Length: 161
View 1 (tube, one colour):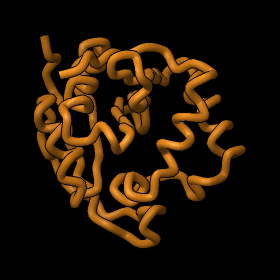
View 2 (cartoon, helix red, strand yellow):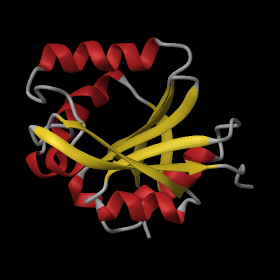
View 3 (cartoon, rainbow, N blue to C red):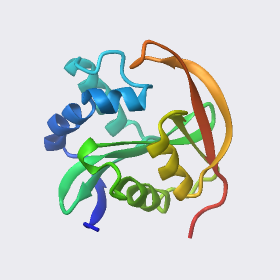
């Protein structure tokens, strides 16, 4: 497999990340997305907040030096939650699994929560391979689908070595 790495998100990454987060198939699969993925001003404001808020950690995922997506964590309701987005061209190649494992090694807090649309088998598989276990489901409004859908909630309890 190609070399997967994590690094800080750079200003020059923003156009590529914007395009990745507008891919219609990826938006549908992620389900819980920006209200309007084509709103560049909202995207820029969101990424600025992610990059400058001290308790949010955001990294670029690269494959052989090419920007493949992003991964991050944030605190919501006292729980640390992980999230990631990968360009569709890298789906099914082990890139997300490698990136999640690398990222988790840099996060000292446990437990960590993750969420995915319950029909997003790829993302759920990535999270399970990284040690996450299903702790429940919730029904929530998925902006990308325009309706309530089931979301699987997962948790990683023990720090991976």
